[in-house]
Image (cartoon, rainbow, N blue to C red; front, side, top):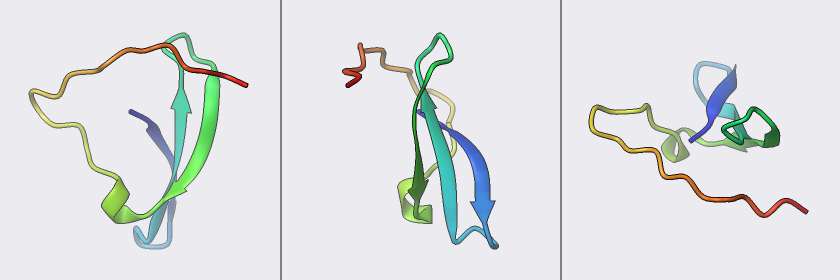
Length: 53
């Protein structure tokens, strides 16, 4: 799960920030519209430890 931090044009792409639950940014990726969806009722957050280089 990430946070959209920028929308390109009229939704042609999205800059999405991915962070740990304690707020440390892991990365920011540019994603196409088909790679992004809004959170829906019934979605569960899955937690796992990130391997940070």
